[in-house]
Image (cartoon, rainbow, N blue to C red; front, side):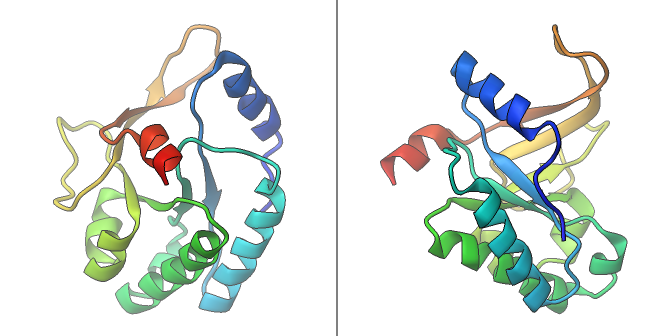
Length: 164
């Protein structure tokens, strides 16, 4: 079971202090729907006092999960996202382009917000709808040492979430 990242608080409160809208993601190790629901319960407990302007994304990239195939991967994603959604969160799915397009059912892909990762290309090779594209893991940002992920947002999630 995963937990709160050791630098989450610094990042979260840094965003809040700078008035930068933020979201979160939950890295999954689940290989069953029950494990996904357990992850969701832990995620809810960890994030219960936080306020987000972007979705809470379910990060599915573990090979042992992806090896389960489309039907099982889709069920795991749905199990996690349904729990968070019932708790009032705007949820989404973070995955690399190939597994998102090939290992997740159309029903699940179209149900939740998508954040697609695909590096070194002009645009992702994922043909479905996505609100955020992670295009690099080797970006730089003034004031941050080391590489950072670079993303482009195409949806105005702060406005969408505030309106909901």
